[in-house]
Length: 299
Length: 287
Ligand SMILES: Cc1cc2nc3c(=O)[nH]c(=O)nc-3n(C[C@H](O)[C@H](O)[C@H](O)COP(=O)(O)OP(=O)(O)OC[C@H]3O[C@@H](n4cnc5c(N)ncnc54)[C@H](O)[C@@H]3O)c2cc1C
Ligand SMILES: Cc1cc2nc3c(=O)[nH]c(=O)nc-3n(C[C@H](O)[C@H](O)[C@H](O)COP(=O)(O)O)c2cc1C
Ligand code: FES
Image 1 (spheres, each protein chain N blue to C red):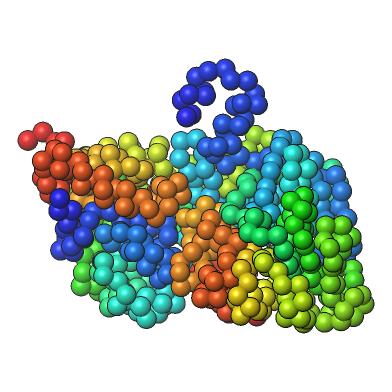
Image 2 (cartoon, helix red, strand yellow):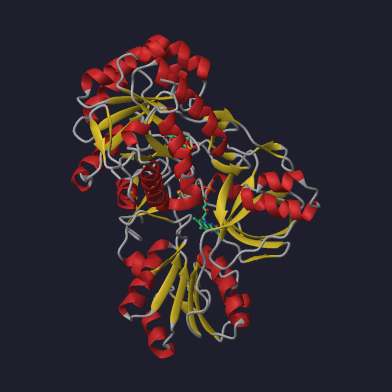
């Protein structure tokens, strides 16, 4: 079966890509994802300045998923764009550059710099544990609107906005996203884990973001709701570990999906597994991927 | 799995066993001994609350709440005993080196792959400085397997050769090197490597130590067509193969999960000994 999907003008050979921050730190890793079969590759969220990230522990597995507080480590947009420019020809699949600007001026400069190397830009408006970045930007409607506009005005390709999983905030602020082309739903939920013998929060930053299995039904519900409330294409993210998890997102209205934490459990072979599982399902159900998208909605 | 064990009364030990399979589970250790032959180097011995077991080359994540968590390859990690060799190079390792007896630390793991001890019967081990810990565990296990072991062990001075007696116990012969000439042969570990290879004709070479030293060992092994493995150091953050911080390039291999042990063939075609990623992911040169 044909797995090709389209989002805001870019064509993917299949609807599976990695989630930002998971194996997208370097060109060598993006290449590995492409070779593993990903339909598009997404970079780590890149900030204006270089960031070392938070102290370890930064990633822990819990019973219902994972917590991370990496703290957006990245070499800064100038360094990263240099690396990407020198190897852009190696990519046969779309490269989506995730950026986490904290104000419109940064957004403008970053968008202009990534113009030549990015097929799409994903704006991280949702990292739950970084000061003046991600979610802290999103909580300011005017600021978000200006950032999205600055990226849009300085970049030719589609602009995606990556949202937090918090329904009320998202619905309240959705107007500020008018100028973006597609929504990526969702990022992690602010969360904590405490070690009972050490009697302290485990993460170096104390707070982190919950991803994995527990996030799946939460992101799914938001995708479902946003599909009805906006006309924008949606990329579903959250706890996808199998093709069934992904199909739920397509039925709820996502045109493509991203895989994060499951790469811990299954490694990059998960892409092959998802592709084969989806192909089989579409064949058995005698349905095309395009028809599947949003099918869970009445009428 | 979670539903299964949480719904039944399995008893404490079984419950802990299952928890350790599905979540990051820290085992508490009480420091029993801190042997500091030098200001910046310590051999630490912990008594663990629960059993932990590590193969040679694997690493554990060692956590001191409020300070940080670092990857360390134990020299002993068996049952409830954990022995670590730690060098003070920064904030968290400094805390470990100066940890007082009776204090607690927390450990999770083991992580990563391990040395292949079943590739032959003649092993040459090459250990440099504080990299010696996993090589010592390999030597001990190889001697249990009745393999023939020759060790080349080097450090700055005699005091840096903290595991010399242990290596003597598990090796047929130990060639010791000190940079200041205070003991054994004077010079670096790799000085007479080619001669030792030519006379001993090992089937396998295992190495840990400073990266430039390991690069030399790897190059020499590959040149001599001898299978070789090295345990490499990269910045470990997630220890789970997701964050990308420990990448070996251009292959995009992850030292935390695909490694930390890699074969000479893989390393010789990588940036090993040339560049690595800093904590921010910036490419930096290895000195
Ligand atoms: C698989 C593996 C096994 C190791 N085994 C041992 C061992 O047995 N004994 C020992 O003394 N050291 C070992 N190390 C190195 C040890 O982890 C680092 O020295 C330690 O993390 C430094 O942390 P810090 O906070 O003290 O120093 P920092 O001030 O944070 O950094 C000092 C330097 O240490 C290195 N470093 C920092 N953070 C890390 C990190 N998370 N992972 C790896 N390197 C880092 C960097 O090169 C940095 O420049 C091992 C490393 C790895 C990857
Ligand atoms: C280790 C790690 C790092 C992450 N870094 C980023 C990031 O830089 N930018 C971002 O937008 N999301 C980041 N995320 C969130 C993921 O992109 C994704 O939204 C989230 O993990 C949910 O998907 P999952 O359940 O499949 O992991 C990160 C997640 C993890 C686990
Ligand atoms: S430390 Fe995160 S991928 Fe290896």
